[in-house]
Figure: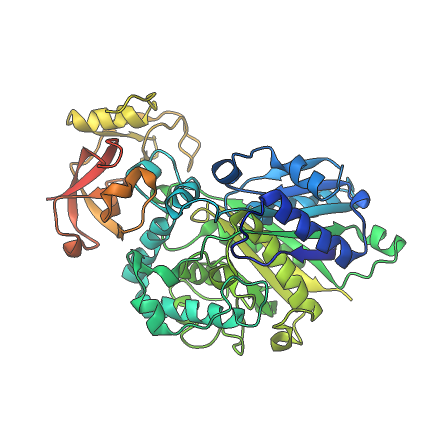
Length: 387
Length: 128
C-alpha cells in the first residue's frame, strides 16, 4: 500500500554553531508543515531518528523533546539504528499509516555533531560497531569500512582511484545544492593526495561530521483526499533488514546482505525491479559504501560497481544517476537525519523542485538506501510519482 | 589492567589467550563463534562447546588507522585487522612487523597486548 508524502523539509547540512538538535529538527519539521499545508496539531504520531545525542548533547529520550519543539503533542518515539535511524523512522511511519493507526505521521531526524571534537565524534560514531570485539580493538567507523574496501580490492580488484571517482561525482552533484555542506567540486588528484584517515581511505573518501535535520509528513490516501492535499510522490515500498554487528561475524566482508534483503522487500512491495529505478540516493558514508550499495540493490553484480562512477554510469548524465543531492559525502552526514534527508531530497527530485531535478526530468521511480554501522541495519524506501 | 567491571565472555576469552589456551564456541554444525554466545545465530543450536582455537590464523583484511577516538589517540598509527582462525574470524591489532609489510594472507598468531592510551587489553596478531 502506498503512503503519500504530503511534505518534506530539511535544514542545510553543515556546521550550525550553537544550534541544538532540537532546534534543527524544529526547523526541518516546520518547513515540512509549510510544504504540506498541514499544522502540528494535525500530527497523530512522531518517529524521530537520532543516534548520538547522548554523546554530543547528553540528551537521551529525544522523541518527545523533538516533537515538542515542532509544536506536536502526539505520541513521539525516538528511533535509533545508528546512521539508519531516520530511514527506520520513515519506515515506522509508513507502516503506522498502512496499519490504519494514524492518518498523519511526522518522521525524520536530527543530529548535532560539530560541537564535539573530531576524536570525540570518532568515538561516538564507533559506537555503531561491536563494543567488545571491535571498539576495544581500536576500530573506528572509517576503519571498519576500510577493512571492507581492502578486502573488496583483494577479491574483486579496483583501487583508490575508482573510489576517488565516487567522491568526485558526489561533490560535483552538490555544487548547486544550497542544502549541501560542501558546494565545491574536487578532482581525482584531490582525493588521492588528501591526508590518509585510515588506509586505503583519505579524507575525501569519508563523509564529514555535520549538523542538520530532516522531516517528512506521511499521510493516508483517504486523509489526503479528504483534506484536499495533492501529494505528488508516495512511498510505495519499504524494506528493512539486519545483520551481525561485528564485521568479523559476517558471512562476507564485501557484500551487504542486509541491504540486499531490504531492497528485495522494498522492490516486492512496490511491484518493481531494479531496472525500473530512475534515480537513487544511497548511503555513501564512505566511497566504498556507494559501491556496496549499488551491488546490494541489484544494479550491478558483485565486484562490478567499483567502476560505475569511473565509467560515468552513475554520474548526473549517466544511465542511473546516484546521489544527485551530493550524497552523504558532499551533502553532509548528520547521522540521525540522513535517512530522512534522502527521502526529502528524493521527493524533490521526483517532484521537479530540486536543483538537480532537470537532470532526471522524466524520472518516476526513485530509491533511497540508508545504512547503519557497516550495514548491520539497512532501510530501503521506494518513492514513486503518483500525481 | 585498569579498574573496571569485567565483561563475561570477552574478558574470559582474553584470559584464556594469555594463559595459552584460547578457545572458541563451536556448535554441532561446526560453526565457530567468539563468546559470549548462547545460540548459534546461523542454526539456532544451543549446544555450544568450548573448542581449542587453531594456533595460527590468516589475515583477511587490514587498515592502518591514523585518526582514532580518545581511547586510542596515543596509539596512532596502528593496524587493525580481521584474521581467520579456522571457523572463527577475530578483529585485532597487528603488531611486531612493519606496517607497510602487512598483506592480506599474512599468517599470524594470537596474543593479548595493551593499548598505549588507556592501558586496556587488546587482541594482538603477531606475524609467524
